[in-house]
Length: 197
Image (cartoon, rainbow, N blue to C red; front, side, top):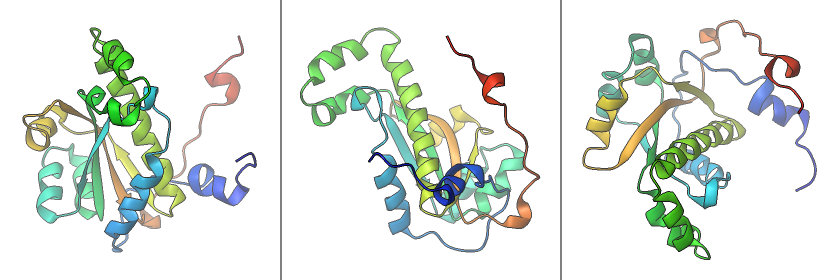
């Protein structure tokens, strides 16, 4: 657990990884989707709260419904991708703490019950889990197309009716079409993005 990943692995996950705008006509098997989840679930969350909830969209009807709630540029990305997942967070996540944090569940449930704390924790940690999903998918050889251009309220009404689950972002997963890539944009340097204190 103390050695760094090799350069090829780091390239695959970060440096060479790209966000495709189109998808190869190549399926993603259910077993691989489960591998992605079973890898990403180990990423750390506050008090092991694991508030992220997922709807994996593979059917034509499911993808069409989701695409109908997306911004125009995102519709074809959803429809063509083998799988698109809604990354959401459950506001009642603390109910799972007796399973996820058995040694301290009651104390943390009281903490998360304070006004605003549970909502902020669910959003923050659900977002982290969405990022872990992208890293896990890339580590397993998949490409990812995360998107925020959609009607969150509409998605919540259709996919999470009667629950306290709220959508955050969506991510198409598959094998990207290299012809769909735009030229790579730059990133901020260490000094531009941060400072020592």
